[in-house]
Length: 339
Image 1 (cartoon, rainbow, N blue to C red):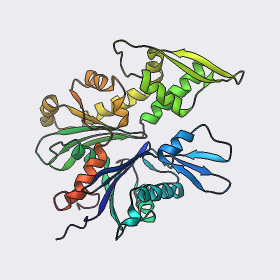
Image 2: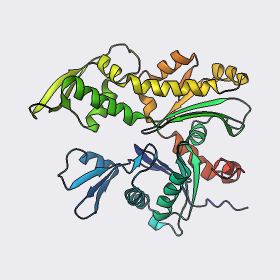
Image 3: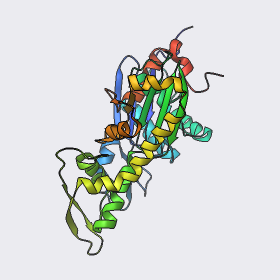
């Protein structure tokens, strides 16, 4: 049978970023999943990196929209327009025929949400859309031997969801998924700074704080950071010094939810697989996994080694792209393919 993916795309439409892989061409787009819209006219002014630059700096009639929430489509019309613009950027209009698309989605999404994602891809110009669960795609992207009779454990922490899965012989043995991710860490920092220091900070500032001094466990040579926000009493700009200890306290509840989900997944695994994890470890992927000290904290609380994937941000789309390029061998990985 001829491979139907002669011209194809794999897409990881994440809450934080959208990444597109083109067969035999690799990753061709990696942009924030953000859209800036003129509410007076409905016109899309910018998407991706350009839209992110405008967050918090726009007049009242221009709003920044994240069309995905918790890994699923929350604003269908905007998601459709965003995806269409991204596909235009990678040159879909120059294709002789419409592309066949594989979309990676979190396992927590419902059948209705699956339909919304498929519809958005079709409306954006896809000829045929296949759905693939993110943990399986991430495991393939991390180059784990998923078809062998050994336990492969993958922890995927995205912007809006976190999934821990155990994969063996091409199937999922155990799965734990929660609608908690790196955006919840950012929100926790915003809430703490507002409550304890009386200043309001934006999403970008919270993310910068997380990147600069955020840790899941104490780290050597920690330093504080200057943070500027708006004083809630005077309305004027105000500087404060924020310490790593404060940030760690602020995000601890969210981090604990993620770590606990990993522990729950381990508790579902057959005893025979325990030695596989002790020897091979667990693999951490996703942007949320880049939080400093998170791998060490998971390792400490589970007594299982944690290894970072070589390309944690791209693992999901690389796995989906590999399935696209090796359709005959890996087509059973698409949802609904196995009955």
